[in-house]
Every structure is written in structure tokens, then in C-alpha cells.
Image (cartoon, rainbow, N blue to C red):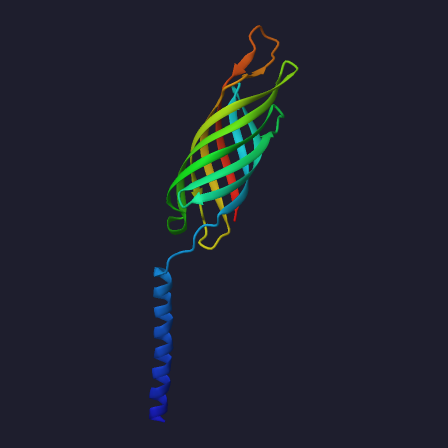
Length: 183
């Protein structure tokens, strides 16, 4: 009976030891890479013409390298004042998979379609932004993105026809973006 108890204790301790060894090696193992393709929805709050406006964009993002991405997007404002289509380049620093956040700098080029005084315009837009991606759960297949940006309209300005003597007109838009991406 005593040798059987020692043998049982030996096998039990062996199985517990392998459990702890597996846990330790699992923590030191390299994490998987981020997928190359992400798609998402962007909620955009913009300040222009001395007022806030909200809109949404559909985004398709390609991770070129570990620290670079290129995306294409299309969307518009809920008020219907303008529609936009374009592309952004992002330069990331940080480690999303290990630190659960990744900062980035964005440079974008897009086109803005809008109507002024009954005429339709399509003006080029250059934009800059800074933001951060958050991965709240280790094994999640989605991430959240928050970004602050500034856009400059290079062509015809957005204007608003008012009943006053001076019409509102702007070539600068300030953005706050909140996005969710799936991969």
C-alpha cells in the first residue's frame, strides 16, 4: 500500500509540475501577429462653421508592416453637408499585442463632395491626426481607436448661406473620431 501511495504522489506531482511549466512557457512564447486586414466603422464628430456635426465612415485598413498601415474610407455627415472619400497612411509606435495600446500619427488625402449656393464641388483635402488603438481583451478580435485630427480643404471652401450680410465659410475642420475595427 505504501509503494502505491508513493507512486500516486509521484505521478500527481509530475502532472502538477508539467502544468506550471506549460504556463511559464506560454507566457514567454511570442504573441501572434496582427492580421493584415481590418475593417471597421468610424464615428466622426467635426467642428466647422462654428458648429458641431456628426457623421460616419466605413473603413478598410491594410497593415503594410508592423508599424505602418494604409486605409481607404468613405462616408459623410448625418446633416448631409458633405460626403468624403479618401485614404490615410498611419505610422504606429508601441506594441498593441503586449501593451494593449498602440499610438499612431496619421497623414491623409481625401476628396470632399459638397454643395455651395446650388453648385456641386469636389475639393481635395489634406489631414493630419494623432490617435491610439486599444485592445481591451487579450484574445479579442476587435479593437477601439480614438483619434484627434485637423483637415484643410485646398479647393472651394465649405460655406453656409445665412440671412445675415456675411456668410459662414471655412477651409479648416477639426475632428474627433471613435472607431471599432474587427479582424
